[in-house]
Amino acid sequence: MQFLVHYSLHFIFPGLIAFIFFKKNWVKVYLILLFTMLIDLDHLLANPIFQPNRCSIGYHPLHSYYAIIVYFLLLFYPKQTVKIIALGLLLHIFTDLLDCLWTFSNCHECFVNAKIHNFFRFLNF
Image 1 (spheres, rainbow, N blue to C red):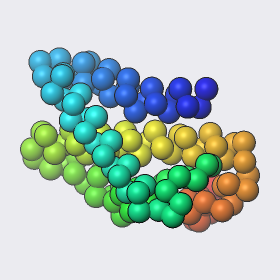
Image 2 (image 1 turned 30 degrees about the vertical axis):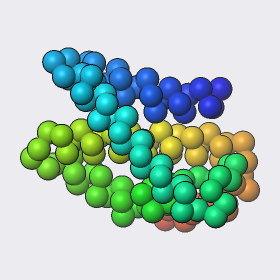
Image 3 (image 1 turned 180 degrees about the horizontal axis):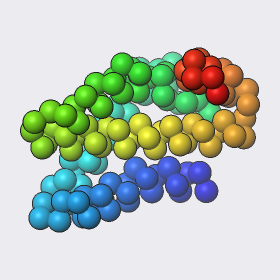
Image 4 (image 1 turned 120 degrees about the vertical axis):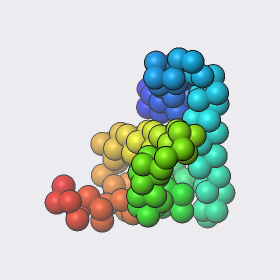
């Protein structure tokens, strides 16, 4: 079920957003939102590249807290295309965060060992 929700949020939800909010150019917007999936290329820098139960938030460079702040700030950039890219990146991060939380609900050790654990501690969770 987690797999289905994760990939639905990565591929179907952006299509719905594009269709609902950008009716005139929804195909173009949807393709831009899909293009933002390239953020996952940073997974190739990890060793090992794939590790089950690893949370990408705070672990991979394009999933870092600094990068997330930049994505948020890009929402306020004047060009609409840049805003759409920022939206796609933030949707991606949100999806990955939900995936992390789902994983953590089944694996406390995964949470304690995740880099995002310190962020949650900072927030007093």
